[in-house]
Image (cartoon, rainbow, N blue to C red; front, top):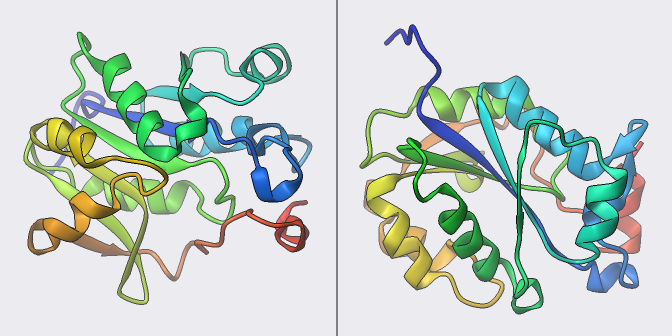
Length: 200
C-alpha cells in the first residue's frame, strides 16, 4: 500500500506526568542524548512518519514550553494532568477535533527505548478509521498504539485515572492488530530513580 501523501495519522505524545516516583521531576524535562526527553520523543514520532505531532503537557508546562524545542508541534495543555494518563488522552482527543486526522498514534514520553522503527511499523498497519493497531514485544501489547477515529469516543469514555486506554484495548482485544517490534525497540519505562540509568 503506497501513500503519495502523508498518512492522515497524527502523532500524540503523552508528556504531562509529574514524575511522582522520581521526586516530582516531570519526565518531559529529563535529559536524554543532549536534549529533553519530550524533544526526543517528539522527534521519534516525526522520524517514524507522523507529519503532525500533538504534545500533551501538564506538570510544569510553562517550563517545558520555555525549554523544549517543539517547533511545529501542537502543544496541548492538560489542566487535569494530575488525574493520570486518561485525562491526557482526552485532552489529546480534543486537540485533534477539527483537524483532518483520521487516526492517532500514541507514544509515551517515558519510553525512550522505543524509536522511529517501531512507529513506522505501527503506522504501516493503518488502513482506515476503524484501525486499532498496537506494537507488541514478544507477543505482549505495548506502545505505540494507533487508534482510528472510530475508536476515539470509546477510548475517551474508558480512559480513567492512570489506566489510559488499557481497559478499552482489553475489551477490544480481538480487534487489535499486533505488530511485533521486539527486534527494534525496548518498551521499558522511566518510572523510578533506578530507571534513570537508561537515559544517556
